Image (cartoon, rainbow, N blue to C red; front, side, top):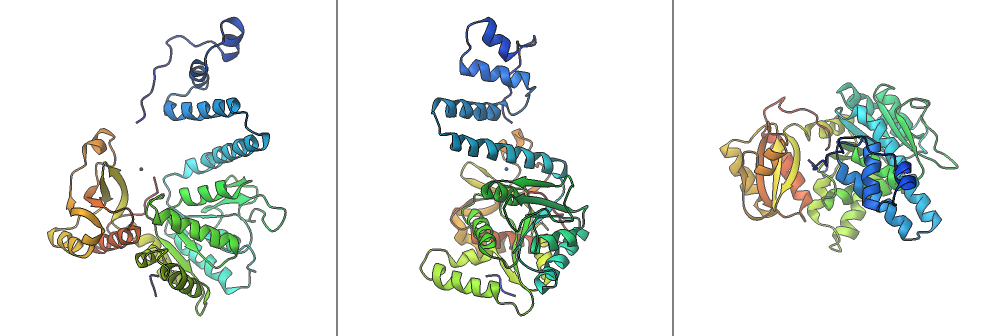
Length: 374
C-alpha cells in the first residue's frame, strides 16, 4: 500500500485565609491579585497555581474589557466542556487510545461499517481504547467493535443525526460538546493514533486539521491511517487532489505524504498504529535541540545509517545519542529511556515521521510498548 511534553507552587498562608466574601465585606476591597490568590486557597489548589492564576486573571480581564455577552457565553461553555472532558479522560490516562473518524451516514450493512468494526475490534483486543465522536455510522461501528469496556465518546449537540451511540448511551465514558472546536481538541489531544475512514465535510475537516497539527508541530508525532475498503477510491482520489493541487502548487511538501498511510487492509492499519510505538516513546525540545526518547537505542551502525539517510532534516550537526539533558534531569522527565538529540528543522515534519519509522525498524522484535500522548 502507499504511504502517501514543575511549576513553582506559592505557599498558602499558615492560617486558613478568610473567605472571599468576608474579605470584601469586612475590610478594604482587595486588588485582583490578592482576590485570585484567596480563591485558589479556598479551592484547595496546591499544584499548577501559576496556570490556574492565568485562567482567573483572564476571566477578570474579560470583565474589565466589557466583552459582549455572546462572547462570554462561548468562553464559559468552552471552559465547562473542556473540564467535563478532562474529568472523563483522567481515570483512563495510562491506557493508549486511538481515535476513529468517519461518516455518521454510513449504514450498518455498508462494508465501511464492517471495516471500522473490525479495526476497532483488533485494536481493543491489543489493549487500546477507541475514541469516537459518539454518533451513528462509522462512529457507531467503531464503538461496537471496541465494545463497551473499551469505547469512549465525545459527541456534538446537533439538531439532527448525532446522538450517543447505543454502546455509549447512559455511560460515564461519553461527554457532549456544543462546539466542534472543543470536540476536535479532545478527540485529538487524548489519542496516540488516528484512523480516518471516508466521510463528509466533518471527516475532511478532522483529517485536514489533524494533518495540519502534525505538519506544523502543534501536536506530537502520531500514526495516521486513511482506511478504505478493498477496491475503494475515496482516499486514493483524496491523495490525487493533495498531490496534484496542493503539492503541485508548492502549498505542501512531498515529504508531507509521510504523515499518513493509505490502506484498505485492517491488519496493516492496526500494525501501523501499534508499530509506531515500537521504540519511539516521545519527544521534547531542550533549547534549540530536539530530543527523541526511545525504548531502544540504535547501535553504532544503525546510528550511522540514520545520519546518512536523514541528514537533510538537520539544521546542522548530526543525530547523536545522549544521556538525559539537564532540564530533563531536573524535571525527572522519563530518565529511564534512551535518547537521540539533534538540531532539527521544524519545517520537515514528514521527514521526522520517516525518521521515527526508521528508528522503530532498528528495534529488536517485541521491543517497546504502546504509550500515551503527553
